[in-house]
Image 1 (cartoon, helix red, strand yellow):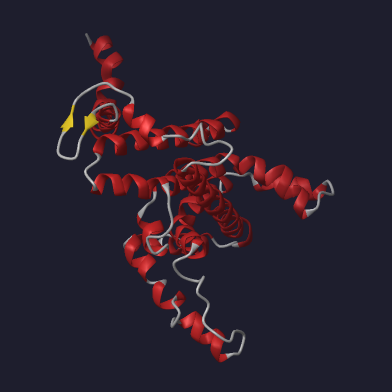
Image 2 (spheres, helix red, strand yellow):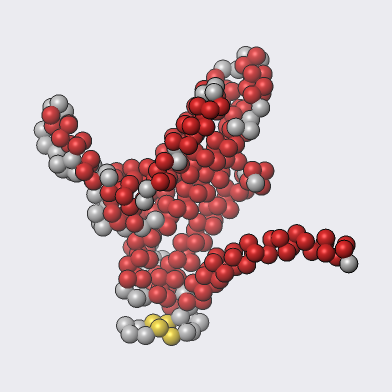
Length: 293
């Protein structure tokens, strides 16, 4: 009896988390997938099993090639933002993590600086985005300063409600997701390996490329998954900082939900989920993140 209890003990310990995972993650996904096959009209939604919603989402996309249909252009725009934000946050996150681990010698100072990077979490995402508007607007601080020093003769329109402002806001919101995993990986690197590389005559760039980056790739992969997942589904940042003029997959789904077109919104959500999972699967082909867990 005691042996049986000990055998089942790990399963009972994992059961509460598994139940929460099933109820709040798996079940909503299954419901979304099921709804994506339902039919709808202007006043009703009926359970069914048809592929009309997926056909509508990609209507005339193949026949219009080589011209890109609206759906393909929307997903291409989303992937463009995702790639730009991922690259910038990777550079910033890696640089900040490297500085904290290898340049800051005091553990207390390193801890304080690491905590400072989490300060953006103390406020709402919307508040942080709105704070850019008085800075980047036509009459904002940046334009007024540029005018006062004579660098420009008229306000710059592209600072706000543009691709630039969208990328800036997304980088501001998501850089911390890249810093923390990379910082965690770098802090586990044996400093003697770095010293050995220098002792054998390796330059700083050679040590970085051949020692530090390979040993930090798990953190890079985890941070990349966080950033890509958030950016691909974002619609609030793109809507607010883009002036509701820039398309993205998340904005399309939001518009369809607001129009009560739940089945086609579910179909687009499933397509977006598949794309994100394919990106994550590609990352996991190169890195085993279980080493970090």
